Length: 41
Image 1 (cartoon, helix red, strand yellow):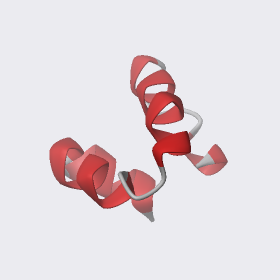
Image 2 (cartoon, rainbow, N blue to C red):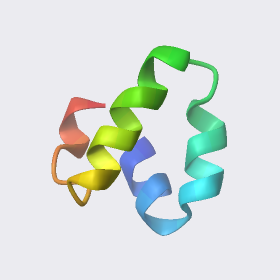
Image 3 (spheres, rainbow, N blue to C red):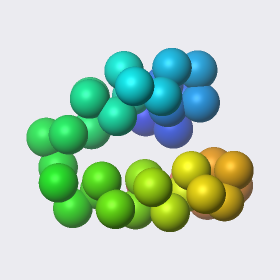
Image 4 (cartoon, rainbow, N blue to C red):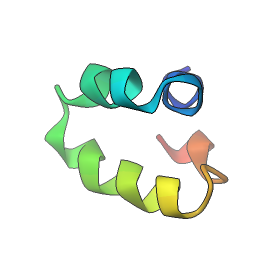
């Protein structure tokens, strides 16, 4: 679900996930991979 938000509107999806700072680095990693590992979020 969150991955879809990131794909469709990255800034909004990123803000939604900001509550969990542990995810921020992982999100950047996923973004570099073209969001292929979105199931890991």
